[in-house]
Length: 155
Image 1 (cartoon, helix red, strand yellow):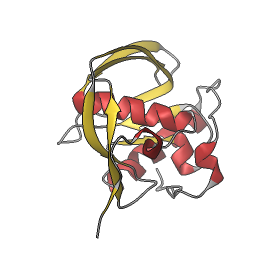
Image 2 (cartoon, one colour):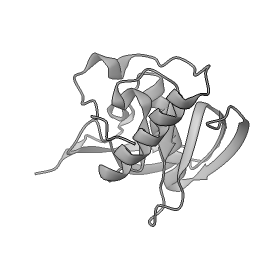
Image 3 (cartoon, helix red, strand yellow):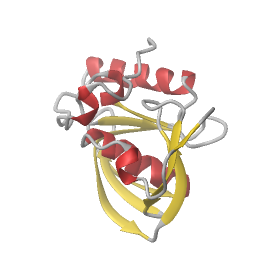
């Protein structure tokens, strides 16, 4: 595994739409392993492949306190949403910035695992936000485009 550089706001790649993953091979597995290590080192709860400069539809998430909720989602798509939540969001690609976003309270996502098997995942609260936030990255959308209250900059 290796730590990858996290792409920061201002890099045009963050505005590009990621391509579907078609090969489920060692190269993908290495990317996922690197993303996991990079996310944990950066103390994030989610990371999209585009944030490490790779335009592939792959995300990693772990919203748990004890790192027991690690998930890999390949070619994810939101298939159902319910309710709404307004919470503060931030992003590893925009260090020090945050803002209140409006997201679904519950989300169902269809995605493939690292071997290409399809699964359906359900997320509520923080996990629902993570799903939405990271899938937005795959479509070239930054959380600041979803902010309903002005972002707060850390001092």
